[in-house]
Image (cartoon, rainbow, N blue to C red):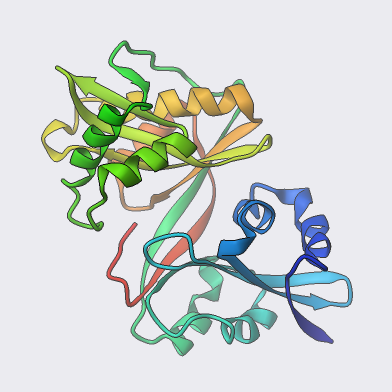
Length: 263
């Protein structure tokens, strides 16, 4: 019989022990439950000792992020624990009909899930690339991000906090930060790479390749693999990641419920 448990300090080891055999697949739950519990709420569905799925609600971003990882037979029940609106959900594609039934106005985008293992990455070293560390870097970072029309503005102070906690590499051209790539989860098994972005005036010049190569190289010094998600129809980005050595290992859906955000 299916039983849904709210994961807390008393029972989190039951979930961790179940998902640790495939940390890449469950990287968000594995990391957030252990390292950011104050920002993380998880409901897990068990049939006896067998995990049938879980829904994770992470509140540490501008808009809440939900991870729904489950089988069809538990999807509807777990969705009952989702927020009512204003969140982004990441889920396997086969759960989409159940999501659309509950959130008929939701928009969805297909994402490729890509991974490169230690020893398989191609490096693109450049003197134009370095890690972002200083207050000046943070100000440059905020200025670069202000050119995005699909994300809210971010202050230099928040950027300083970001680069102070999370490894981030930038490409500088004549002193201007024109591209960056970072990692938002670091585990010995896998680093999650994300936030790859190039200034619109500096695209198609290989800068995203340089930035992504740098953070990937850093990742593979410290972990067995590096992984990322990329919108499936973003063919230039897919080619960049493939050139570094990333290969598609699966698909996910980015589901927008009321935020207007896109991958």
